[in-house]
Length: 145
Figure 1 (tube, rainbow, N blue to C red):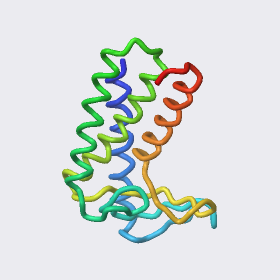
Figure 2 (figure 1 turned 120 degrees about the vertical axis):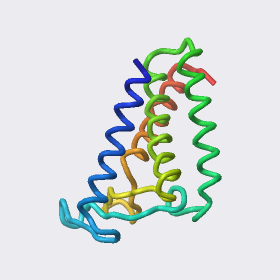
Figure 3 (figure 1 turned 45 degrees about the vertical axis):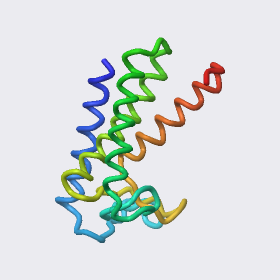
Figure 4 (figure 1 turned 180 degrees about the vertical axis):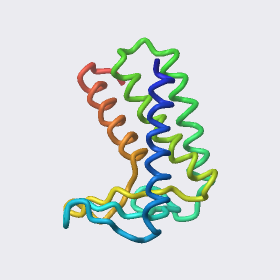
């Protein structure tokens, strides 16, 4: 079940990135809701917020370790489904961006919410953040370490 969730989320991530690459020129921004939400195609060669530019090998190693640890957690843990779904989301996001890093040498970003900050991100990033938040809330509520 969790593998299917991971695969479906990776497919959604990759399709969304390919769609943007095919329909928006690099650096262009398409307003969806003026001054609020744009689709802006950028190639991120770093981590979140553009940190560690051109250090792809670091991110590839980290993503592989996250995937190994996540798969072990999903198969060995006796925790509730919600925690495993959260880990599946994190894994899908890590793999989605890993695919970009390996095949493109950068990550395709395009979500541009201008009312919050000036950073552009993608669906895989959303999966990692939301999965991490769900997992943290679960751990806080259950008192697990």
